[in-house]
Amino acid sequence: MTAVAIEQQTEQKTAQQHAWDVAAMVCDPEIPVLTIADLGILRDVRVDGGAVRVTITPTYSGCPAMDAIRDDLKTAFAKEGYADVEVDLVLAPAWTTDWMTEAGKAKLQEYGIAPPTGKSDVRHAGPIRLTMAVKCPQCSSLHTKELTRFGSTSCKALYVCQDCKEPFDYFKVL
Image (cartoon, rainbow, N blue to C red; front, side, top):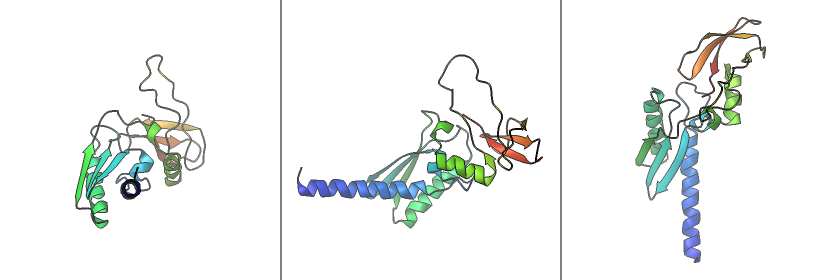
C-alpha cells in the first residue's frame, strides 16, 4: 500500500469516527438523558465523500420518536457542515435492551427510571422466564409493585415502591 493510500484510508477513518461522534451525541427525545448511542439504537454511520448515511433501529416498530430523532440527526450534521444526510430505519434485527450501554443504564438510574435488568430472551424458545423484583431508583428497595405494564412509553412499565411510596418507570427488558 502506498503512502497516499494509507493517508486516504486514515482520513476516511477519521471522517467516519467524526460522523459517528456527531450521531452518537443526539439525545433520545423521550428520555433526554440518553443519547441514541447509549440507547443502542444507533447502528451504523457511513461517510462517502460529503454524504453521510446513518442507520438507526427503533426500540419498537411503532416508536413515535423516530421522526424526531431523524430530524435531530439531520440538524446535528448540518451544524457540522454536512448537507447530504440520509437516515435509514431498519427493523431487523429487532432492537433489544441488550444493546443499551452500561453508561446508558446508569444514566437511567440517575434520572429516576429503573434500568432493564438481565438479558433479553426473545430469541430463545422454551419456558417463560419469571420476572424478578424491580429495584426502586429512588431508595433501592426491591419491595416494588407493577401498576401497569405500559407506562409513559411502550418501552416502560409503571411501578410504585412499597417502601418510599414513589412511582417510577421501569425500562422493560425487550
